[in-house]
Image 1: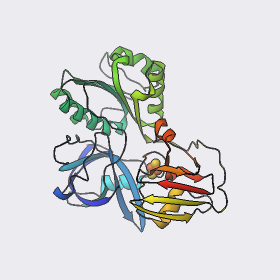
Image 2 (image 1 turned 45 degrees about the horizontal axis):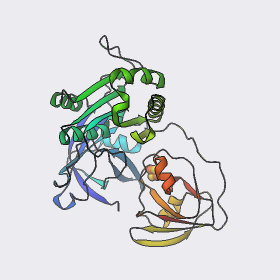
Image 3 (image 1 turned 30 degrees about the vertical axis):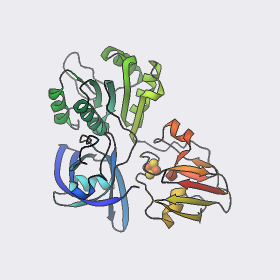
Length: 354
Ligand code: FES
């Protein structure tokens, strides 16, 4: 069950003009709770002027090995979003010694280290979870190789330049890094311009044996992740080998037809071992219904992107407005995003504990 704990900030490192890395110390008694897989994220919570804000930020530090102690520190990357309430606070106000409310790690954009070739296509702050994935993999698996294809606007706007360079120095034979800058000329031979499906379809086979890659990790803005996925599919890569995490979605693209919920619909919920049944008000999402009665229900983005509100649909039917978080196997298995779900049947039953 996801829980929040206050963790002290032990470092604030400026990465670029518009991004920082925050390091948080984990006290010994909480280290097991904050044990994470490479690629997972943390949700940070802040109450300002009586309004609670939550945002998810990926962990960039390596994951602890199974059997080793849980992490002593956690490091996350935060990039300023225009008008972003939490990121503005993170960049301008958070100092060493402050305490942040931090949810235990979550997320399924993860890698179980194993020998083989892995690759990532990332844009902007999408490097953050992939830094954890690549550093954990290379440290734990001498038989693993990683190819990182990253795109950004300019060198100055590129997050974790030093960390990626250090990783390359440590594993020169096993880590390949290709950087594509959209607004800066590079040395001869290096690609520049925007990465799209057409360019990736040409670039990827020139860089690595696409068919031999055991797992592809795509992370960044919705546009880039979608273009990269289509490029990989056109090159014959199966969906099962493609993992995606979307950081920003511009505008809303509802996936289901608008419809009103049946009158008098109710939702029955199991959450952290306790149950309850409550009426769903017209137009609200199931997460909103649950939160009115159980403020401890897990959520972060409320936008169908982070997957924190995932629940198992035990009974009834729901309509989801949009889903950028769940894989097709998860929806087929019966999982839904509570923040995007509206009842289609009079009774709906959700289990947040599965
Ligand atoms: S809270 Fe992020 S997907 Fe529902």
